Structure formats: C-alpha cells, structure tokens
Length: 598
Ligand code: GDG
Image (tube, rainbow, N blue to C red; front, side):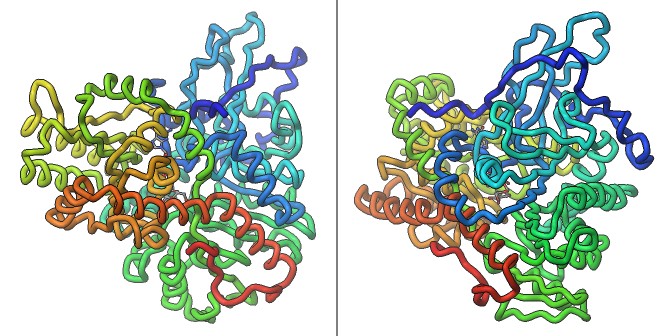
C-alpha cells in the first residue's frame, strides 16, 4: 500500500453562500477576557518548509492508523468520550488567492505553521474556498477513529484561520467533513491568549521545569493568569458537553489546572483522566514552579493521571507528598487521596504505529535512497548516521555533535566513509532559549564541517527542511546508525519509528539512557550517556564496527518490543484504564498499571 505523504491531506470546499460560517465576534462578545481574532499567524514566520514543526507524534499514515486502531481499541472505548487537547484533529484554513492549497500546512502537536493569507477583506470577490487538514498520524490519528465510533466530542484550540467560519453557534463542527461522526468543539483564543498560555506558561515555564531546566524558566507577568483563563475556557467547554456518563481525557501539560475545574463543573459520576507526555521533575526542581501547589491540585482533579514511565509517576507522587501535606500518597498503589477524591497515577509507555512505518519503509527503493544521497550531496558509498529531532534544548543535539567531532578526530579512517545527517525542526522560535539553541547548533555544525570536511565530503549534513514521511522512512531504513541522545525526554518516538522502519535489521540504535524510550529498548540498543563525550564517541565507533549477526540480533529484539508496545496497544491500555476508573474505583485496577511490553 502506498502511504500518503506526511503533509496533512486536505479537502477543499466553498463557504456556504448564505455565509453560514460563523462570525467570530458575535457569539463571544460577552467574554471580555478575550479578544476574538484569528490566531493563525501566531507561529508562522514564513511559509517555508523549514518553519514546519514536528512537535507532534504525527508521523504515521492516517488511513492505516485508522483501520488498525478501530480494530484494536474501539471495543474498549468508553461511551461518551470527551477528548481535550491543544491541537485539533481537523483545521479549516482559507486557500490562498489562487484557491490552491500550497501544501505548507502540517499537523503538529502544539505549533502551527498556517498559511496566513487574510481573505476576509476581499469584499465583492467570490467567497474564498476553505480547505481542511486531516490528522496524519500518531496520537491524533489514533484517537480520531475511536471518537468516530464513540460519537464523542473533541475540544481543542481552533487555530485555523477559517475554523470559525464552519462552526455553529456553540463553536462546534461535525467531523470528519466527508463522514460527520463526532463533534469538534473549537476554543477561540486571541493572539494574546496564545502567546501567554501556550508560548508563555506552557513552554517557558512547564516545559523547561518538567525537563529539569529550571534555569531556563522564564516568568512573564501575565502568563500564569492567561494559562488559568485558558484552562477555565476549556473546562467550561467540557462542562457544556459532559453528561453523567462522560469520560473526559485530557492530553498533556497545556491543561494542568483544568482537571480540577472540570471536576467542579461536571457530574460526580463522570470520570476525568489525563496523559502527561513529558517528564515530571523531582521535588527539588518542582520547587521552582510558580503556583506549584495549584498545578498539583489541578492535576489531582483527575481520576487517572498517566505518564510514560514509572520514574515520572514516582516523581509526581514525591511532589504531592512534599508540597501538599494534606494529601495521602500511597506509592505502592499509585494513588493520591486529596480533597475527598482519589487519583490513580499510572505509567503506560506510548508506542508508534509500527506496522505503518514498516510498510512504508518496505516501499522505499534504491532510487529513492540515491536521490536522497544526491539531495544531501552524500558520497554514494558512505555509511549513514541519522538524527531526527525538534530543535529543542532537551534533545541533546550539541552533545551529539561534540561526540561526532570526537569520533571523527579519533577515527580518520571513517572520513569520507561515514556521513551524519541531522534533521532538526525549528520549534518555538520566538522563545529566546530556543533561538539561542538553534544558533549554537548551526554554528557547531559549521565548525565541525570546516574542521573535517573536504571538497567531496562533509561529515555532517544538517537540514531544517521538512522531510516527507516516505523520505523519512527511507532514511530510517537505510541509516546504519540512528542516534537518539536527548538530555531528557518523556518518551521519544523517533527511536521507535527507526526500529519499526529498520526492516532489513541491519541498523543500530544508539539511545540515551535519559529517554523514556530507554526503559523499553535499553537491553538491545547501544546505551549512551549523552554527556559522556568519550563513551559516546566510542559507542559510535562500536556501532559502525558491530558484527552483522549482533546487529541483526539486537534489531530483531528491538523490533519485537516496538511492535508489541505499539500505539494501538497503548490506546487499548488507555481505554481499558479509563473504563475501569469509570466503572468504579477498584474495578479490576491493581497496583500501579503497566502496559504489557514494559
Ligand atoms: C513529545 C515528548 C514524547 C520530526 N521531524 C520530522 C518529523 N518529525 C517527527 C518524528 C516524531 C516527532 O516528530 C517527534 O516526536 P518525539 O517523541 O521524538 O518528540 P517531541 O516532539 O518532543 O514529543 C516526547 C512525545 O511527545 C509523545 O508523547 O515521545 O518525549 O517530548 O514522530 O518522526 N517527521 C517528518 N519529517 C520531519 O522532518 N515526517
């Protein structure tokens, strides 16, 4: 099967002649806290591919994910499911003046590079056509088919410039557009709200803090208040849709305060759960969190709180014990009792759509690989190393470059015969820490290439351009060494994608012992400490020199782990837990839940 490319697939249709697309200002003028304007320009500095962000886990093929997930997860899906996420599954945007989608939009988890063409002032011209991006993979495409079956509700920030042209008076639209099966409730946020809630408290405070970078926390005056306000907006929207039977499932760190607000606004019989996709810090680090107690209290509004791995779940419990003395924490059971409510804290490691990566990788051929070598100007006989990351200070890219420099310095015989491709996707570029980090990475690449490069060969091919899904799978399949070396990472999907696409079982994964994925893959990946330059450089040499039999044995074992714990398994586990929590506090939930493959 041919897997569509990674860009969001689009449908185009015209605005209804009666203008029944919604007027933003009309419905929400009563809410003085918000300016109602399109936020479509929020993240987009340009429409170039290099501006696309990959903050999501969205690199699998949507139709495939759809089919498989429906088979494996739907039976466990609670009725009356309400999903809450920052990112929406479908986004409506105006086409450009030519009416042709320029294809520059991409589904991302929390950053948006949207065509900013303003068609609202073209008075007298025919109504502009509108396109809708569809989810392309990972979590979004995993949840979408479940909601279709459950006829549930998805609540998310409406970031598309035409989003509110197609919603009704309650800001709802039925999706998918061609097979209306569930309700998408859009939250209309002003640019000021997005800047403070998303680029502010979420990504200047919670992100660095949860990753242990307390020194990078940037507290701006209104960010927390906006974060609170936006959480309230989402909570109010949940309350609009919740029934006695509802199960509310929130995604990630953009909604730390909402669960408690939701708890107070929906029937007691409804359940609330959240998955926290990033690490949780130690109490010593969490101590720096502005409004830390409020954050903990917010999260304890959940009946179920999920992390990727045990150590984050334990760190959360440690923080509750330390900062909320009135809470009763049971580490053994993974429960917290606070304010008359019990919260179960679980660790369930997320996987990828392994089958779809496998399938796409098998479809790549020599010609595709050769064209990639030509595109990146790589000698055809060169061995390949690969790194694929958002340009984020947590991902350990400078440390990786330092290790590569050491490797090339110590192994001149590899000059010209080994090339490292680093795909780095610009991310959150308005935040100074990210801008500085990007400058550092680029200058290090230049320096190392000047040191070792020749007219015919550059040791490091560095690109910030979006790599299409099929090209990414081709690179994964043919990379001799994949380096995943974060300083800390909630999970890391890239490591698992590489393994799933390594269909010839002839590649080696170098994996940081600080990634959540390490817990699943450590026994057969080559483990590295990303800050140990010498050990890291030696590991690169070892990987390149590994005997083929050992390489294959390791990769076969890794592939078993990744396929056993794929996204469908994870979704099924989530819904199983949600159902058990919903059906009763002790309905079959034993002490701390783990997914079977961990
Ligand atoms: C957060 C947590 C956790 C990147 N460049 C391209 C591209 N990508 C895709 C990768 C992968 C995704 O972006 C990155 O996912 P990660 O998991 O590695 O990292 P975060 O974005 O930080 O995700 C993380 C995750 O949430 C899920 O819970 O694992 O720990 O930090 O899917 O493939 N994809 C394509 N072209 C690119 O140029 N096609």
